[in-house]
Picture (cartoon, helix red, strand yellow):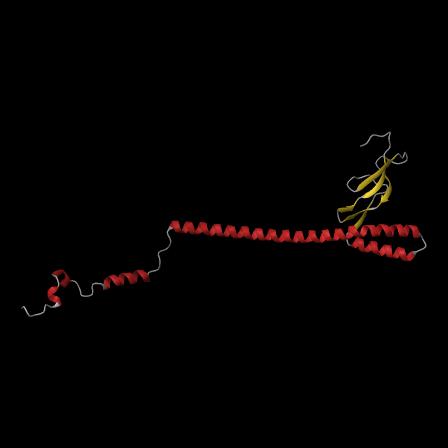
Amino acid sequence: MPGKKESKADKETPEQAEAPEDACQPVAATEQEAEAKPEAPPQPDEKAVLLRRNEELLSRLMYLQAEFENYQKRALREKQDIVANAQEGLLRSLLPILDDFDKAVEIAGEGDSGLKLLHAKLLKILEESGLAEIPAKGQKFDPFIHDAVEFVNEKDMEHGTIREVIRKGYRCNTKVLRPSLVIVVKNEGEKNA
């Protein structure tokens, strides 16, 4: 009919007429099901990659931890060295005063006991700080802790023995602050060792 409007059903092809009206719904349902399903477990290759990455991170962490521990030890050692160097510097600067005290006590002799008490107190404090006199008189000459200022012939003493101490030497713990200045016996007839 010419004046009649065609309905929607008339325009559809036979294939479209057989398809359900809501043909898009099954596609939407499959997308929702895919989203609702948990992700598939990683493939064996992915597991290997993740394990390798985990091992790398763990080894880096262990390396950084060891490096930090070494840093702490090094910082502590440096701190101890700074304290020791400051202590050695102070003791080294006090050695001339100690030499003067030794000479004053020697000159005073038995007369001035107050000076001797002060000298003993000073020695005690310095010894508590790590200062120790280097033994010299009657000892064998050691070039690491003694400086020879003169060699003399002495038949009564063994070759290489220290005959006299000109200036006392001192050490702080194991480090030589100042070597002893000594006179050493060097008998001409004997050969040097």
